[in-house]
Image 1 (cartoon, rainbow over the protein chains, first blue to last red):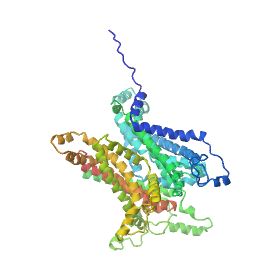
Image 2 (cartoon, each protein chain N blue to C red):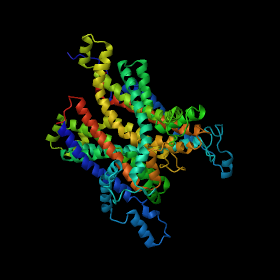
Image 3 (cartoon, rainbow over the protein chains, first blue to last red):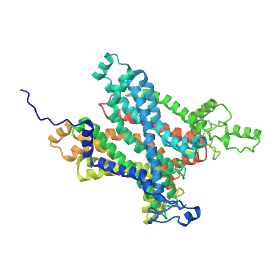
Image 4 (cartoon, chains in turn red, yellow):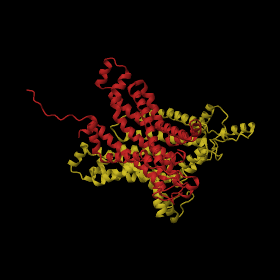
Length: 302
Length: 335
């Protein structure tokens, strides 16, 4: 009568995503490299503390090659490059991450409003189109150039540069997320379960938060991953043009810019930060690729 | 199609006006205005005169509309005058650069050829590299070539141009000494020797930008080819006994080119705007370098004009891409 068929315990969703993610060799490689870089910039400073040198001592050890005392050598002011690489990495990754969060927040918000409320769709999408047509790098350069000093007066040069750049990047890169979310919401809105929710009298706020938002998470996550890469590149472009972070609060892009003058004599000073930026962006892009495959239930079944 | 094009053209006008307002206000309201550049020791009446000569003592909307009039009316008239030797724009106020005290448009015109030769060549080279790679790696999906090509695309896509540029300079310029590290703008091509020199100095910037462009375009080419390879008409063509060459290069390629052509069109504005880094790195004296110079020198009219020109290019090529897509693909009907 009741035959106990031996069914395997169904895989949890997270496990299924992880299993599919592991199939993508590039994504696993990307995760490993990114993990290594994060450990390098976060745990590294705990294990490796640069000596505090007096100015006279520091000038004696300037422009040194790699040695046991300075594993990556020193720069033109006798500062330990390994130490600078680690602290610069913290700022670079933080900029990428926070700028992405801002962009995703705005993108999702505008995308949901445009997709769900028909009246807002037209104006909001025109706004998105307008932002897409803005020449971003020139405008970012102008914004940084013109507002840097004013913000620095209020919160100090380091925090000023950080806040300005993070917000400038975040507020100019939400458009793709908004378009993706809007498209998803337009399709989800017509589903039966949304109709069911509406028919029992759920207000739009609850429908959006409980029923629609959880279902747009996967494309948003992919867009967010790729957004980190884009933000890191944009920040390093600004720093590379000398309009980013101040030299005593460096990012990888700033280190590269500083090394540019000494490129012919000490090429490694350009190579290390450049390699760090490139590896971060490459691994993040691979992770995004892998996530896209893993989060798509249609692809996962294969 | 015509109504669609017209509607898009009409819609482009408010978009552009809005963008121009955003650019104008952002640059104009910012704290680093020319008024703050004048030393405090300058007496007030002289200061007033300076501001008047810069045209910044009027209310902001007056200045905005004046700028619009100069941009859309006076400057085109000046262009006509320069072309036909007429005197239509005589006595009209042009957009004047703060740095050089000369009209902005001729300055931009001087910079344009350098940008077009170097960055334009790079774009063409990029497209020419990307198409065969995309086609072949889609045709032999999962082959060694495809995996290598995909990796190449991913790397070219991820490694920023300022890093590839510096590595190229170190390797080819400093170590091997094959190419000059700086671009010499004054070089004019008159004979074979100077031509070779021009090619050599163009090689590195063109390679750097070309590779970056090729990476992005080859990804689109590959995925578009893959999509079409699975279609029924391909099987039909093969069943009719057509050669593999005809099937791939005629039937599949033509259909796969439709989205790629629009992607290529969409990328053209970046020739002008996105080349800021490359121009800066190699010392190409083009538009990107002009923009950076203007930003550093607080030259507001130049920055506003250049940024707005970039915006016009983006809007125009977006429109061209959409119209092209409708023209090439009979399945797309906008109206």
